[in-house]
Every structure is written in C-alpha cells, then in structure tokens.
Length: 535
Image (cartoon, rainbow, N blue to C red; front, side, top):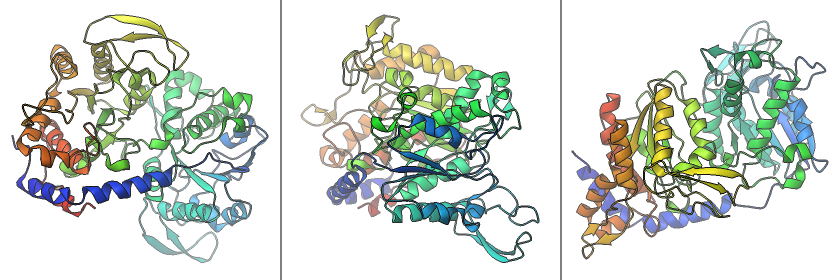
C-alpha cells in the first residue's frame, strides 16, 4: 500500500519552514471571530411568502410567529414579501426600503430560494435567477416590465445583501429554505434544488452565520409523519398554517441561539427561553451538495473536523480533505464531525440523528471516536465519558451538566448503536480506529500504540458486526515512525493531539486509500504539491 507519495514527502519538508507563520495568522483570524454578545435593536427578516406575515391562519409565514419568542428588548421587523426572489426583492425596491431602516448592530435574517428557480423571463413574474453562485449574467428584454435588465446568479444577489448589511455595521444571517410537504416513502424533501448548499457556500465565503433550517424542520416533520404534517399544510405543499409557521419559527430561534457571538438570554420571552438551543450553528456543519447523489458522511471528534472547520489555531481534521484525495468525484462528501464530543455525546446531543437523517440507502458513513470517550462520565464541564470496553454495562446518572437523568453505556455500545441504525437505513458503516497521538517511545524511534483501549475496542466491534474497518491508529502511527520526530512535529498544531494542515492531509490520504475501492474511484496526487503553497 502506498501511504505517502514522494511529492508529499518533499512538500512536507518545505512546510516545516512556514508552519509557524501559518499558526500566527490563524490565531489572529480566530481572535477576529470572537466578540461581545450581539446587541440588536431590531431583527429584520428578508424573504418570500414562507416567511411573510398574512392575516390568514391557514396561510402563514414563520416570520409572523417569530416575534412571540422575543422580549420587548428587541423589535422584530418582518419585511418578507410573498412571490419574491432575491432578484425581485431587490429590483422592486424592497431591499432598499429595508436597508434604510437598518442600524448598527441590528440582525438581518436572509432566506430566499423558493422563487429563484422560476423562469428568468416571462410575462407573469419574471423573477428567476441564474442557478448557483457564479459571476454569470444574462441580458434580457423583460417581458413583464418591458425594460432591459441584466440578470445575475442567486449568489450575486445574496452577496449584495450581505455586503449592504455589513456596510451598516449590522449582522447578516443566511438561512436555508423552509420544508415543502413532498414525500418519497417515509422521507420528506429536504430543500428545493441546491439553494441550501449555495447558502452554505456563501456563508463560508462571506464569513456569515448559517442556519440550516431545512434539515432541522425535516427531522421533526418525519417524526410527526405524513398525516400530521399534512395538517400543517392545508393550502399546498409549500405554505403552512399558523402551527406550521410556529414550528419553523421555533427552529429558527433554536439555531439562532447557537450563533457565536450570540444573543443574551434577556432578548428572549418566556416562550423563547423555553426553546432548547441548537448550540452548534456557529460551526456551520456541511450539508449535501446534490441530494440525489451518493454520499460519504463522516462522524467523529476534532481529529476529523476541528472546531469551526477553518484551521483555527492551525488545527485541521482529516475529514476536510477526503474529497481532494479522491479527485472531487461526483459524490457528496459530508463531514459532520464535531470537536469535543465522544461517541456518547455525539448521540445524546442529536448530532448522530441529524447526520443519519440526511443519509440515503447506499451511502457510506465513516465513524471515528475514542479520544474523548475517556473523559469523566459525570461532571459539570463536559460529562462525555463512556464506560470502558465494549460490554453491556450501564450506569444511571443525574447528569451534572444537563441536569437530566441519563443512562450511560459502554464505548462499544454507542458504536454498535450507530452501526445498527445506519444498517437499518441501508447505509454502510465503516469503523475507523482513533488516530494516534504524538507520543514517542523506544527513545523517540516509535510512536506509542494504545493497548487494550479504544483502537482495539473499535476493532473488536467492527469484527463482531462484520463491517469494514480502517485501522487509522496503526496506519498513521507507522507513517509517523518512518518520518521521525522532526517531520512529525510539523504535522501537529498542538502538543500531541490535533494535526496541522499537513498532518490532516496526510491522514486523509491514508483514509482515501482505503475508501477509494469501496467507491470505485482512484486516489489522485492532488495535495502533495498544493501543500508547498501553504503559508
């Protein structure tokens, strides 16, 4: 097996000389992202009919219900207008009217897409935009207005909105679409077209918060089922009644609580305070690119996806570079790992169910946990530990962190739970043993291997369940042995656990070597030369 290309080795030596500069720049960028709590006088909403306010209990937008979750400390100004796309919201002057009232520190929630897929030019509405986020445009003689018009991409109009909001010293928040009542079997549609992914891309590009409303609402509607969901959509498959609008608004509030910096609790009403926060909006977890494509998901801890997923403090997870080693195939590569979590807390905090609900039969999910499972079973800090081993022991605790009673199981139990639930959905689970830490033994000649611990327990679970195994613990350690201490030092951004950009790419190559045959693709030598340009 070719673990490390010659080009990669050469590039790695070059990287040693610039890693310190990279860490410094990353630290400055990280500081820029932190700040005081948000302090808006007004929260504005820009959107279409799914957010707009109506005097009709059977046809209501989520923005009409949004205000009931907030205290008198903030105004909720819903400017959403039915039938509008990004393009027509701007061209009709609605955006300029909104911006005229935006003040410094205000928040503007921006949600469009349902109408952007309409025809670009017709006699009825002429509201469509070019799909995607490119700089493409088309000049038309608008059949509706009788005027010449240059029409741009969806991304162009969103960029303009974000730029305008930031110029006022206000905070833009981009959000994916509301859910339509369209089902295939027992699964509801998760967004129309690729607008959710394009919003996600733009949030990263423009460094704005991103709220994944689509998947959050879809999760709840699938639990309700078809009949109960139908009662929320009495008019058509797109528009809901008061109850459906309140359900959507509640999820917006939950996600908004997870934006960093966020809103102080005093901004919420009693109803708003009762909404359980989705505390992870700030990390902007990825979504599918094309929903119909086969997908490879990754779940795990910070060694798979570190922090914000942007290299803060020079730290990267290996899951961010799998697609590059595979030549960016026509697949969804979705890294849903969350730093700081164990197999237990990834399940109990809802991350596993959210990721699983995004998967389809035939998808693959890579599962890597262990680094955080050794933590305390119960404390007021993280309460993330699991019972050692793969047995069926359990202990009931009054969780000091959550204030709830919880039954804690073994490390192996949580892995088996993920394997079983993935298989039940027709998803192929692949167990990865936890990557090794930078701890040397034998006078610094060999990376220490864990014994009788998480790598071995993960291996046992995989063999018992007869699922594929990628023994990253052993594979990566062997490569480290061959490189030696000086070169391995450049692969880490902290003392011994979190990899640098080069280290993450190295591990990703090893994963890709194992994953490629399962996908019927080949590993490409795309990153070795690229690493030379890292500063």
